[in-house]
Length: 610
Image (cartoon, rainbow, N blue to C red):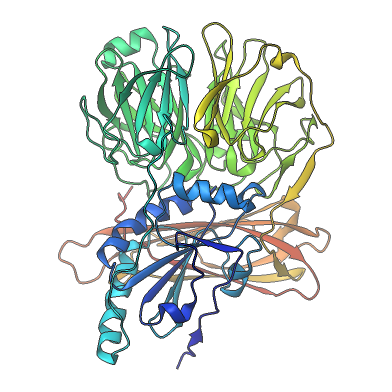
């Protein structure tokens, strides 16, 4: 019989959304408690927030969700930044601020996000990493409700959720902006679920487009869900397409088209379902294809390129042919250059084409990198990987950024970077990185006005701000800088042979499906590559022996696993594809473990079978 594990007490720096009270597990006895270990930079964590909303509503009288904020970046340790993120993303359940990641360690979390379920008697009954677990969680909650009602240990009664105070600012956490031909600015007002047109002074309201409600309604009273990037189509393409601007409607997993003259909005790409398929680089009907958190859009290579942050890829969209498909990236979350179909990216969040159209610049936020595409290849201008970040000027190969969300290619060949978590605008030119201005509040985008001014979307300050004349001519402010590495505790591995054991647990009512070949796939790589002496590559076996070099003191193991399942005993069984990637920081020591177990739990979302 499996031993029951008592849930460790919840402790941290403080609580949000509890009216100033500290919650203890004893206060929650009789309730089913769902702990969500998250960090607000992580797109997968943001997906889970949205997946949990219907679950929280359905089981409001028995289920208490608690977000345990476990920060990756230095900026995310700031209490004020966390409070802003809770408002930005509409989190209304209690949040424990755990900047030292003590709860992460006590609950043995290994990936963002991780979900832990505690039963009404205070025991841990389930752990799961990644996203896509909503249906499985619903089944588990139903089972726990039946069990503990029979035992008399379930306590019903709806818990309190925080009510967001109405704000008085014109914009609320604006994400992206676009300079319009008439000198006005179009702004994605993300938390207000709308678009705003501002006059040339970047302050005066001209009109608001959208009802302010979350949703996907088209027409002249449109709905959005945290709209992001904006792309102005060339006149010829706009005339054929019937709209002028493409909008990345991020949380809806859609692209929308806006006709500027009427304010009418049309869905132009995306089914509304989140992508959980297999990678291909074919053309698809744009309205039938699944997308995943499109964050920014830019016109390049004769089409709209989409920063598909949710799956660490770039996609393309042709507004004339009404087709869409993958453009770059394998969905592996890491930093690797090369031919577009082989590169690794990490939550691309900002795009800007150079004025001559030769290069597409990319803010690759989770690797704190700036990259570019030219002639079918991707290159890195600055940035060193998933867990290296900071504020360091100097040679681009040594410079550090912290979660940049925006880029702007200038006519002089240089590139400005919205270095979001450093609160700065940086400049890359002639293989040098300098700081142009700092002390900003989470700048998320940069726009060049028709008269040559640079406008910064200062998201955390809820405004657009114009850089003072002469600022672009300034050199770096401080080249010494500060370096950071993620505080996430590394896994201690012994050098030599390590057994990687991927344990797959199908979702209830499903089984592995080998109708079309092997049902599982495992891909392993390392950064630096020298960390692995043997064991890299792709196989269909979920167990593998890795050989760890004794000469590399630390690094990151990248593991990508997937499993195909189908429904059991169904007349028309649905197909499902579960996919999870791990970036596991490791430190090599003689006292380390020789076994690395990872759990892949089945998702309940039907795959497209491709």
